[in-house]
Length: 573
Image (cartoon, rainbow, N blue to C red; front, side, top):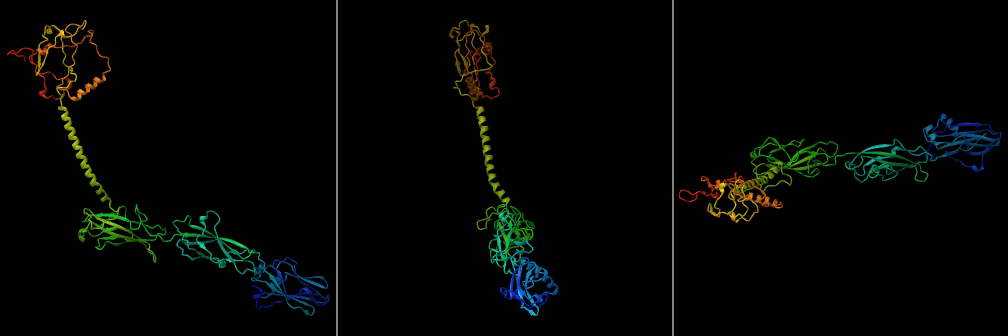
């Protein structure tokens, strides 16, 4: 309590009596009624001094408002009356007049007191001693650090904390105002600083409020923010400062609309769903695609959500479970007389909140199986077809492609069969000039049975006439046995196929580089013409070669060899 604010106080007197002869006078330089001393003044500091008559008795009286005698006894111990000699006196302090001590000891602020000096019969006027306070103690944040919880949707200008009730200063007498401030959190990750979300608009009132920057619980890197605060006990350079921290926890709030559990559109508004029913279906739960109709709350508070059908259910065909979102078909399409191919329902999901509308919508297209959607009816949005519809849409072109492939394969099989049949029936043309050969018939000219044969005689094969070959026409072989012919390679051109002929040609090409055989008469060949073949009277045709044994030969291509022996009518058979 300051001295200038004190009105009237009860006065208690304490007499300090020292026997001194004569009257007392205060030093002429200290002729004043008020003296001032700092609370930090050291021991022995003089308050006043004077002279006295050695024969005077000096009495020192100390007064302090609102203190009782016991308290005054403690207070008087801070003063001392000294007598340097018989004619002078000095009043000084024995220890600092610590105002904070007085405040703690007496339970009130003591910033002044009165001294009454009486010398003999004379009483001097009261001398007021003012104790000047000194700023020697820092202000304090009581109860720091502080902890606060706020929601992410905290409104702008809403009060976070008023610091003034929590700040005290133990200094007595000089603190008039405190000066507050907030500043960035300088320890650790700067993302934890709360100064970006809060502001102190006046430094003298200590009120911290929300600024205009939104706190988003879902995107904040941390939900615990730190706000540094400070307080000073004076505006100038002599001010003492203290610091503290406010720990702020940001909690989630219901500020997001529900979203639908749709694989292609998690955060879309009105995503498409589909279901398919038959015109006779009723009292069933719809199988909804691509997933069951289910909403998701991205907030973490677990607020209940409710489902409802907003439009498209005028005929009362459907009902919805408000808690789960399951949709049931109560009446069949035939019952209500609906002739279209598509029904569309608008479904709403809404959080159960008062004073706040957080909802979302979805569109459910219900297709009637087997009905064609015409141009006058509303088509479902892109991507809203059911899995069954997609399957049918894919099945139709697949069936068409499959039928076409089967037809093409069947045609190819027929063509291959006809080609193979035609190929088997194809024979070598008469003008084929490939080299004839055979593997079974051998011509043998050895033996006496063939001696004397007329080689100039014509042999008739079918409708062809072949001139016999005379041995005289062969060139001189130089030592080769007479009437010995080299083997004649023959082939049955009537039964040989084109493919076999081509294979033989390829075989000849492969043997092209082999050393050719030279008929020099030094090599014997174990084969020759069998005369019995030509003289036998019961042969009808040439035996087929083994190469064409398994193949059917057109009888018209058979070779008839007449018998060399004349018949009864004298004509060769």
